[in-house]
Length: 447
Image (cartoon, rainbow, N blue to C red):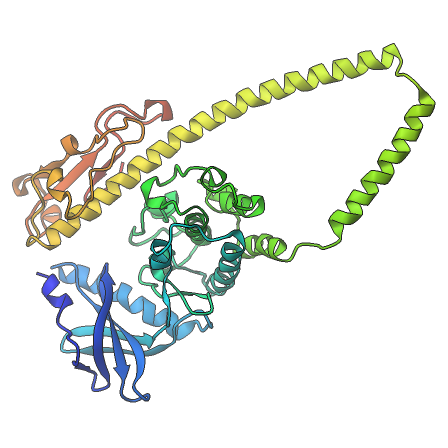
């Protein structure tokens, strides 16, 4: 059982003949995080991240070690004031650990939970400016480095309100035309293309936008991935400019988002440093034009009947055009909502799949016979398909017996079993999706 490995370090333990464990401060995914003192550096506090293998397979463990090592490689390569400094990367008694700078402060996730009020617009804009400056460094690497897991739990806010990213375990180098080796991410913050294994720098822009959305609204994006309520509906005090920036950052289609962090940062900077006199000059100009127009109207007298008819025809054409435009927009909005429902349903399948793997990890590789066994230990409740407005997944869950599997399939789990879950019914017909779709099959992905 892997959970025993998580507790192998106790307060007072000495690691690598240098680091003295103070306490466990966190954990999740593939690592456990400890606070420690560095004997070789005036007993300064450091963070120790220890790898906890999630698989019995040697091949999978090698991949987990590669992902864990990725953080050390990034911190060694990229230096920035908002990144922790790498001190050490070592292996001791079969356990792999990273020692890095301790960032004083608390996670953005805890900041959000500690108050019921949203951040104000200026605070969110300053947060975005700092984060975009950091992302610019990552995306300017050759090849660009995509973090792929920007979310409040992976960001520390220091006493000066500066954000620091502290987890890079699923980051990867972006090579155009080459998909992701492993499809991972956090529901609510991962963009649609991440579930398809096709991330690029715009995927980080989406995740940052989703994080800013939560800061300004206090609404957790994981509750309704890809179908978030409008910012102004949740927080009327949010500035219009900030709302527009976030809406563009979290567009479903990457082509409709900011294409680079520099482009987004420029819009943020404009709101933080607005032009002081431009509005006054425009206002004065409009008043002068208005005065001239009034004087001219007095001299000209009443508008002729012929001119009035022309104006009436123009107004009528404009109204007709506006009506057609609204009909087109309504149809487009309906299609958008249908696709968002499909994406949310897909996200639900990934959430259930993660819960199944966590269940198997704690039960000697065995999967549950019924999805409802995942509640409440691995899922707070069964998610609902947004189109059906109910749980369409529990009755679709299928376990394949070993005798029905190929040798390759048998190697995927210790129990020799794999599973299939799908949205049972034809609730996404209007989006052009077949019956009993989307479907997730272990080892084969989404269909």
